[in-house]
Image (tube, protein in one colour):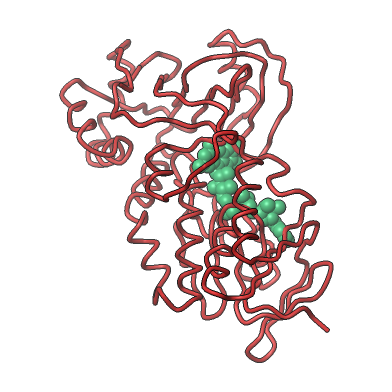
Length: 360
Ligand SMILES: Cc1cc2nc3c(=O)[nH]c(=O)nc-3n(C[C@H](O)[C@H](O)[C@H](O)COP(=O)(O)OP(=O)(O)OC[C@H]3O[C@@H](n4cnc5c(N)ncnc54)[C@H](O)[C@@H]3O)c2cc1C
C-alpha cells in the first residue's frame, strides 16, 4: 500500500521545505522526498542573503548559521575597480547546509515528514490522486515539484521547461577578505565572498569557466589552490507559471531566481510559502501572487541578462549624475532599469575608471 499524504513535495531545498512548513501549519499531512542522504548536501551555493530580505521574510536565522557579515561591496568592471556607495543593507554569508537543515527542522516541527535518500523516480496521475515512487510509494492529492534545476519531476511528466541554465564554478580558497567583490564582464560575472578564514571564489559564464576563475583569482592575487570546488547552474528564464491544478512547481525549477545574479534563496522561500498558502486554499492564484512579489523585477533582470549576453563587449555605465537615483531605491532594480532604457550607458564604466564609493 502506498503511504498516503495530502501533499508530497519532491526536493528538500529552501523552496520545498518552505512549502512543507506552510501546508503543515495549515494542518495538511505532508511528505518531503529528498534524493540525498543529508539536507543541504552537496553544497551548490555561495550562501549570500541580504539582511533586508531576511527581515522581509521574518526569518529568525540562528547566529551559528551566519559565517560572515559585511557592508563592504566592491564592484570590478573588466577588472577595474568601482567601489559603490549604496544604501546601508547588510550582506550575510551563511553556511548553506546549516541553513537548509534549519529550514528542515522548522518544517518537521510544523509536522512535515522528511524522507532522506528518497529520489523520486516515477510520477503518475491516477483518478484524482498522484502516485509518486521513490524508495517507497506515496499517494497524495497535491504534488509539489521543488527539485531545483534538475526538473526531474517535469521530465518524468514530459513537461520540462528550458530554464536556460547559467553554468557556474565556485572554489573555496584559504584566502581571507572582509568585503564582497563582484566582477562584471558583460557575458557573465564573478564573485569573491568572505566566509571567515576562507573565501568563496566563483564565476558564472557560458564561455570558459576555468579561464575566467583563474583570471579573477590572478587579478586579486589569490593563490590558485582550491580547497574544494562546486560546479552548478542557476536558471535565467524565470519566473515561470507555477500552478497546474493539483500540481505545483516552486523554486529553481520554476525560475524563482534572479536571472541576473542567480540569487534564489529568499525568492524560493517566499514562493514556497505562497504555494503552501495556495494548497491550503488561502491564495487563489499563486503564479499571480508570486509575480506581484518579484515578477516585474525578475523580468527586468532577465532582459538585462539577455542584453548583456547579446552584447558581451558592453559594460555597465555609472555616471555621477546617475548615482543619486540609484541610491534612492533598490539599487539593482534601478540599475537594471537605467541600463535597459539607455543601453548606451554600457560603455562608460570603462572610461570613468576608478571611482570610490562605499556601502555605508
Ligand atoms: C554556484 C551558485 C551559487 C549560488 N549562490 C547563491 C547565493 O549566494 N544566494 C542566493 O540567494 N542564491 C544563490 N544561488 C541560487 C540558490 O542556490 C537557489 O536558487 C536555491 O537553492 C533554490 O532553492 P530550491 O529549493 O528551488 O532548489 P535546491 O536548493 O536546488 O533544492 C532542490 C532539492 O531537490 C533535490 N532533488 C532533485 N531531484 C530530486 C529527485 N528526483 N528526488 C528527490 N529530490 C530531488 C535536490 O537534491 C535538492 O536538495 C546560487 C546558485 C548557484 C548555482
